[in-house]
Every structure is written in structure tokens, then in C-alpha cells.
Length: 352
Image (cartoon, rainbow, N blue to C red; front, side, top):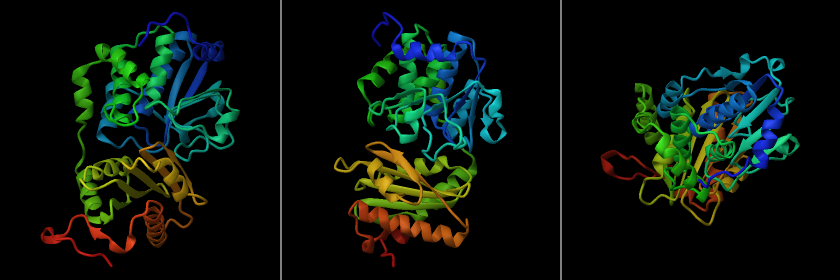
């Protein structure tokens, strides 16, 4: 990063907003990933150091993926479930790596946050927030927090530097997915400060036996539609698996699109991935959930949430069928020629 000559206007506005306040609630995604976790810890560091504000970090859902659990353990974080939060105790509410109305966080709809820092496209509900810093061109929200710290002339301690570095690497897939010059400069700044051994240990976070059972289920259910693979995990306790499976299936040599679905907390969660430069994953997911749910994302990856009314197996089956048919139509794949990804005796069998 270039040397900071003075505190930037966004940092100044943040500091002024924090001054004189006692307690800040930082809200993450329901199922926070490394970028969301690192961004929350980065904002907490800024609030603690610049204005002596005490912070609580909250979410609703699970920290399911091995690397995410390893990161939380390494940072020794005491995370709070939003359902247990008394919002009246907080002077300010901030959201990181998410926004009001996205459907991937559980901040009550009647509450408007004071601060939103994110790298996803700006939502209409965000425009009424007092302090908005949306940089949809950035590869991660952690990069934005790095710039805040740098402009405030604050060098992150080893654990925070490690978390921010991992957050950037995770969201940009080691700078291979939608990374910008800002992301590269942030990594160059953080790398000498980070714990390299811990980076490796976080990346190799251990998984329970159930993880491999879910992975086997995803592969068993995977179907090929032209240059796309679609699969479902059914009802799951670890929503992080949905994005992880979508990423994994993109490694199949002929695949340009993947979609993975799963049911968690009464919602069908969807993750899309693409290598197709002619379509934006964000546009496809918004059309996919139009009128039935919420969704958003980026050029090559996106996600959505669709609440079920009855939350029955029959309703889940109907919704999965509807989402699959809409998806293959939107990307121009042929639903009538689906074959199993994993077929007996290594032979593809037509699915009726």
C-alpha cells in the first residue's frame, strides 16, 4: 500500500461517528465466511483504538466450514447469536460484508444500521444509512478495512493481519477471482505481518465425518446439463457446504456453470458459480429468485435465499425442481439431456 499522508475522509467520518459512543454492534452474514469474520474484527479494532468503543460481533446461523471454525478459534472470538441480542444496549449498529435487505443476515427489518461497509453492489435499503462505504469493484470487504487501518496509521497485530489476509485470499481465491489492484496492495501490506503457519492451518481446517457424507450426497445428486452441473444437499446443518460444493464442481473440466441448493432454517439456499464471461452470476441469481426470495453477488459467483411457506419435503422438492428448470433456461442449457455426474460402472445414464 502507498504510505498514508493523512487520514482519509471516510475514516474521519467513521471516527467522528464513533466518538462519544459506548457500544457498537457489528452484524455479519448469517453464516459468516472468512471475509465477513475478518472485516468484523478489523472494524472492532478501529472502534476500540480510535474511539474506545466496546464492540460485540453478532450473526445468526452457523460457522460450519472447517476453515471458518479454525479462523474463529485462532482469533479467540466470542460471537453472539442475533436472537440473544438486546439492541437497546447499543449506541450504533454496523454491518460488514452484508447489507440491509439482502436476505443473508438477520438484522430485524425495523432496525436501520448506522454503518454499512461492503463490497457487494449497493442495495436500495442501504441508501438511508448514515455511513455507507460500498466498493463493489473490490474483491473483498477485508480490503476496505485494510485501507481504513492504513489511513488511520494503524498496523494490525499478527492475528488481525492473518485474518484479513486470509479473508482477501479466500474471497478472491488467491487473487484468481475478481481481484483488483487494491486487493493486491492489501495482501502485499499484510503478508509480512501475518502468521504464515496459521494461514496454512486455517486453510486445512479439520472436518467432521458428516462433512464427507454431505459431499458424497452432493456428488450422488449432481446432474450435468450441457456445460452446467446442478446438485442439491437436501436439508443440512452446515450451509457453508452449499458454496463449497459449487466451487468444487467448477473443477470439472467441461463445466462453465454450477448451482448447488440446500435447505437450512426454513430457507432454500442457492450458490452459483460461473466461468462464463458473457453472463454475470449476480444477474442470473436475481432472475432465479425474482418474486420468491432475495439474492446477489458478483460476476463469477452469487447466492440467494428462498423462504419456504410450509417447510415440508414436498415443498422443498417442488422448489428445487423449479429452481433447476429456471436456472438451466437462464443459462441456455438443455434440461432434457441431463446425465448423472457419477454413474455406475463409469457410464453416463440418461436421467428421465
